[in-house]
Structures are given as structure tokens and as C-alpha cells.
Image 1 (cartoon, rainbow, N blue to C red):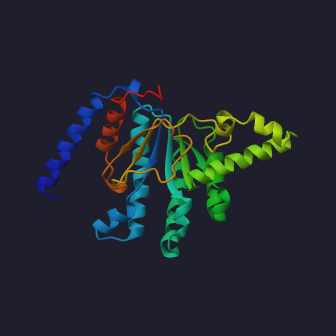
Image 2: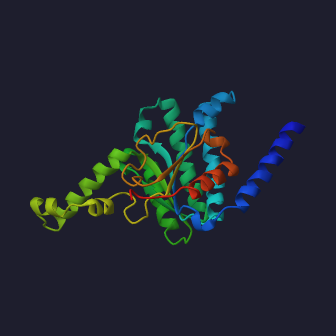
Image 3: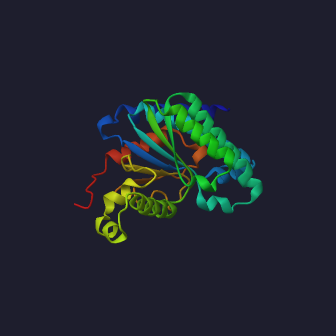
Length: 257
């Protein structure tokens, strides 16, 4: 590392401390959703492989969760694999699934996070399903940040699964379809989502400069604030995270009022 890079790093750290020092913890979002985008473009810019980009993105996760634990965040939803990602070439998808499975096992072994899967298990390989089940069971007692790992997740699929769950639940209770139709409201549907017992995201962060949700938590983000960051996910820094929190704290959330 040359002198210029060292000075730049020092200035960034000093700036991060300044931003953190002015951060109002009372205004910190309780639930943050993260669309971790840009692994492949980061790798390409670095002259490396796609697999290396995915590994670098995976390594960023625990660092990010550490920042969240310092700022009183209670729930984090990490979008690790979408339903659309299954269309990727097998030579990329296979290693990516292995990397994500390692992430799940690492989060569970850490001891600080309560891991919860959001997504459709049936889409996933049996090894991944086992890893998710074991992670949830091993961390069920943990009194720390709830980490939703969105794997095999799609927003439209979640709503479809919620409606299916609602109908099956009504059938188990002997409720007729006309009675169910009369009883359906937004709260009932919300209870059958993957995150039915959790607060909706206050803030959604997307890296890499893309400014769209791509189907991320379509139902839950109706009143969320969004923060789009130009940096690729593997290069996401604490100062970028703090800027997102500062930006969120400066907004006035009206909830349609």
C-alpha cells in the first residue's frame, strides 16, 4: 500500500468516526434489509473471477453485522439468493450455493446472531435445507440480532406462499372459502409471510448503484426508506453504512399521512 492509499484510508476512518459521533441512536432503524449487489462487477473490475467476487461478498457479511450490533439494529434481512438466480449458469450457481451454505453455517457458529430463513426451502438443495434447519435450531436461544437469510427468495413467491399458507390454515380449521374471503385483510396476509412475527424493514440498502428493489420484500417495504449506494457490496465500508443511517435519520417518515 502506497502513501496516498494510507492517507486516504486514514481520512476515511476519521470521517467515519465523525459521522458515528453525530449519530442519534434513537433514530437508528430497527430492521434493515440489504440487497447485496455487485459481487460480479467488483470481481471483474479487480480482474478476478466471479467465484472470488462471491467469496469476497460473503466475507463482508459478518463485518456488516458487527456494525449493526454497534448501532442497536435488531433485525437484518440479507438477500443472498433470489429465485431468479437459479437461472444462472451451473458453473456459477454451484459454487455460489456452496459459498452461501458456508455463510449460513458461519453465522450459526458465531453465537451472536439468531438465524432465520426466508424463502422457499423446496427450491434449495438438500444440503442447504439441512444447513438452514440446523442453523435455526442452534441459534433459537440467542438473544441477539435476528438475521434473516433470504435464500431462494422472491417477493412475488413470498406473497403466493402466504396466500397458500392462509388457505391451508383455513382448511385445517374447517373454515369455508366464503368465510375466509370475508375475513381476509392485510393483517391476516402479513401474519403468513416469511417474516410474519417481525417488524417491517425501516430501511433498505442496495449497493452497486442499481436503483430498484428487484422484488425484495414487496409487501413489507410499503413504507420503508431506501438508500442506494454506488459502491459494490464487497467494497462496502463502515463509513458507507453510517452514511446510510445518517441519511435515514434525516428523513421524516409520514406513512402516507
